[in-house]
Length: 197
Image 1 (cartoon, helix red, strand yellow):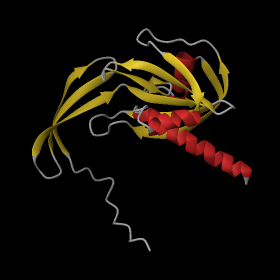
Image 2 (tube, helix red, strand yellow):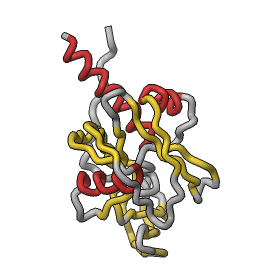
Image 3 (spheres, one colour):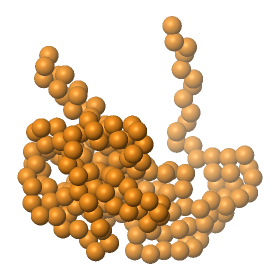
């Protein structure tokens, strides 16, 4: 028998108190704010917050044969190469699906007629307010890629199961990619199981 669940916290209560706030830096993509705060224990301190000016968008394209596409690129902040699902940013005021469709087309040349939102996530919620969305894209058609000037991309078509294994083996470390691949695999497996019943 399972032990009883602990009492739920009041999720609307904010134990932090903001005393002052100042933007220290901003550019077209981010702003960095420093807040003077009282922490939950009553102590005074500072809290740095990175505010994102775009939504993070990831797409797991899957074709009829169970293949997906990864995008490889060198990530400047990490100083290392990264394999990821197709992804990018969409202005916060725009529809996330429309932005995801644009990103898939630009990075892979793919368009899809079936789109399913499979995840909403926060990428590093202790320091940034970034909100991410992941879509499963199906019924694919191939076209021409349209990379941005800042992107030197390598495109890799491989079985979805192999991409998931790369996430499990830490060969894919990008948080949105790991979450997206694992959720896509689970959703497709559940869909298949329902159809076989």
